[in-house]
Structures are given as C-alpha cells and as structure tokens.
Image 1 (tube, rainbow, N blue to C red):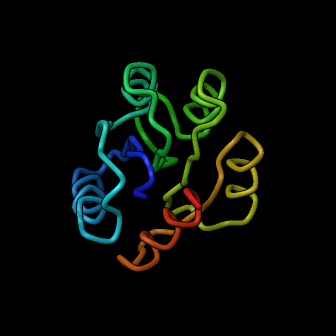
Image 2: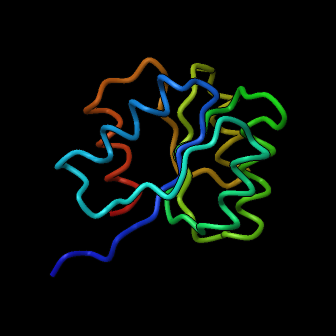
Length: 126
C-alpha cells in the first residue's frame, strides 16, 4: 500500500532555494509528495495554500510582503492539519520557538544538506 499523495507548497523568496527543494522532493526518496506550488512571498503563499490546501509546507521566514511568521499564523488558521517546516537562515532559538508556537512543526537551518531536508520532511509526514 502506497501512502496517499501529499500536496506540498514551497515558500521562499530565493528562486535557487525553491528550485532546490522542488528538485529534492521530486526525487526518488519522496515519491508520494507532489508539489502543489511555489511561492516567493507570504501573500502568495497564503493564496496558494487556500487554493491547493497542501498537507506540507516549507516556509522561509524572511520574505517581502508578509514574513514567514505572519504567514504561518494565517495558514494554520484555515489549514490546522498542515505540517509546516520552517527553512531559515535565522538560527537563534527564540526565532525557532516563536515559529513553532505559531504552528510550525519543524525547523531546518540554512544552509542545509539534501539529507537534512529529506529527513526533516520525512519526520513531518511520519
């Protein structure tokens, strides 16, 4: 039995990071995850999340138009079941704790290795 397909939204203001995460997710390690969309800022992320109702989101914190924390809060408001992995260069504990208080499920520091990203995503969907 294969697990059902999970929709995933990738949110980061860096195109390089968005493409890198998308490429990793499309690889053989996570065959049951499908990319529902890529967003370059918080407002776009909220709009795409409403449309595609992803089960999984990778979320940058420092973005134009709406930062990741505000974005997490909004999305968790209408998708309480969605697991959000914060992927951020902000490495201090208080930032991570704030994001998790707002509803994020995990935190991954940039720069990250492919293995770290895959492991973090697998943990969230377990």
